[in-house]
Length: 444
Image (cartoon, rainbow, N blue to C red):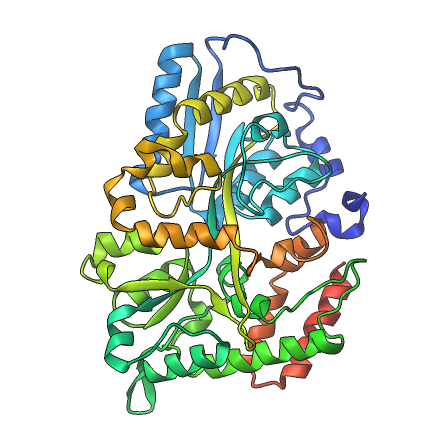
């Protein structure tokens, strides 16, 4: 079983053995079916990484309603995505794990699965049809209940494209030329970037930076889990991607080595970059901070050198932990997705790009004024998950199946550091690829 491999220890050293040693006093060893009626006096703890005011309010309203109906109190602890894994780990190691959590990366979920601390949600998930890649299973079970995609789209300025006579790029060379055409220099320095593609050693880079690489058809592993990043034609594809990145980097604004989630949005929203990479949340940010620009953007998938298209992605979903309150946590989550799922999606109306396909026909969801205003963008996102011509892939979903090995690569920031060697260290692409491949082999 993959979880028995040495690599299964993961970034935080969380294993089934050390979890049980540290928390055996509070974790139940078996789970019955959810209770028919909730028991008053029960308190659930929910770690939420959706920290916008609207999302926190939607969750709080649902929890208050549930407490009024059942007597079950739910304490919400909100933490940004960048710190939620560490917060959940600290709770586990302190002997007081959360009962529920929102999770955003497969690498995070599999860390917990390998530790044996999650409750499968398979029966709940199987009730609905899901978009491509959303409701993945591992060892025959679904370990989270999805609520959105985080497809990494290229945002561009329609007004600037019109001024320069540019067209949506069909190849990576065309994308590079567009970025060069829209770069504004102040002397020898970039004042307005042609694009923003991150390279810091963090989850933002792992998530956002590799759409063009996947569009080239680069694979990290073959069907037998051999590392092939530096092998044959695959190495040639990876080289084309790194050569492209090095040229794109020259069009980017300064400070790219520290750019993370917030800056990917703000540089575009403030007019400091003509392209950026982000999910639907950027549309919400434009409406909130620069509504004039909210009428001047467009989106497209990352192109490869031969015209292939790809989007990197992550997801968001709910997880339930094994605790003495697991039955009540399952009961609450089932009630929540039955009664408040649409409210939750609408609390982040564009970022919560539905993973559950029936939502696209939900009248209350469709009639939201901002979804109506940005309907073209929403339908473009929907087309990406429905089209077999667009690759949807991520660092932590690389390989022949969902597995801890690509998650280990994600957690160790192997691929962001390959970008750094190329863009900051000016190393030959072949050397960067060889070093990354060797590091992957040493990790797994």
